[in-house]
Every structure is written in C-alpha cells, then in structure tokens.
Amino acid sequence: MRWFVLLLIGLAGCTPTTGLKQVDSMAALHVSRPVMQFSLAGRMSVRTPDQSYSGTLSWTRQAGEDTLLLSGPLGQGAAEIHRHDGRVLLKSADGSEIAEESEEQLMQRLLGLRLPLDGMVYWFSGLPRPGIGFQAGVDPQGRVGSLDQDGWHIEYSKYRRYGESWRPGRIVAKQGAALEFRFVLDQWEAL
Image (cartoon, rainbow, N blue to C red; front, side, top):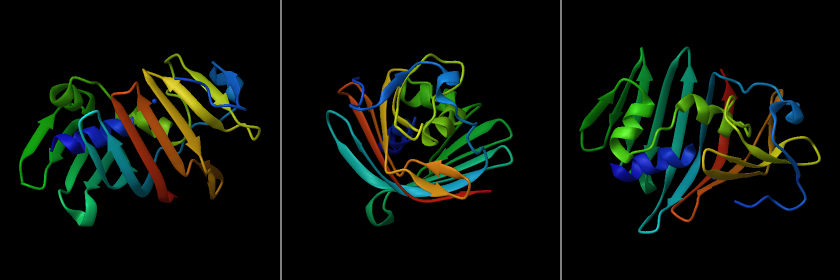
C-alpha cells in the first residue's frame, strides 16, 4: 500500500529548463484557472532511492468528489482513493481501509507529508498552486515548461489540446534526489 501512497505524492518537482523565460508571479503567466471537473487517465512511474514502481492512474473529479484509481502492471495491486463529504478513504487491494478527514491528513499520517488534491489539480494543469511562492519557466507559447514550488521541481512537455484547453502530455516531478514521479497523459476530458 505504501507504494500507492508514493505514487499519489508523486502527483503532487532544481534547475531551470533551458530556453524558458523565468517568471515568479501569476500575473506574469497570463493563464486562466484550471478546469476543476475532469476525468483523466495515464501511465506513471515513481522512483525512490530504494525502489521503483510503475502503473496507471485514473482520476475523476466532479461536484466536490474525487476518485483516484491506482494500479500496478497488469492491474495488480489496485488501490482506490475516494474523497467525498469532507472524508478521504484509501482502499487497498487487500481490502484494508484507512480513513481521514482530509487527503492532507491521510498523507501526513502515512508518509509525514501534506499534499492536497486541490493543489494537484493545478500541477496537472501545468500551473502553480495559488497563494504559494513559485518559480516557473514559460515556453514561447506562454505555457509553463518548468515549475519549482513546495520543494518540487516539475517539468512539463508534449502539450496537447483538449477542447479549449492545453494539457501537458508528460510531467516529470522531482523532490530532490529522493523522489521522482513521471506521468504520461493518455486521456483528459472536462466534465
């Protein structure tokens, strides 16, 4: 179960990416807010100093409810994280459950880190979390190519257009040398 929590934390990135204009304010980015109700699916991998994991992630966010489905290769070791009515529940493949009042409390309890799903919505959209200092590298099209925030360095590439918005097709997030998360977006849909 611990590796699934590491996968989630990886979703939550320190040197600037070459060729990007550096900015440190939301006004300098000229970007809109992310879509807050969506369904996404993709492939991910997480590397720690001791282990590496790979699998898939499906995340549906609609009407104040989040459901994240995480699974390893060939569907092994599936886990589900569900947030609804102010509660967060982690169900693992072995049937065990852990409940908390918030996803931040769940992550704090399991790994000693606080990471909100609301903030990850911004990071998956290629944007900094609001209200927290950051440094970003912006590509010639005005999209974020790199982001340093909350002790993470995140690099975005292979942007693709989905309806009226652009989504990074590849995300690589690092927290020092201790944790690296890679995500390749296969599907995204606004709900």
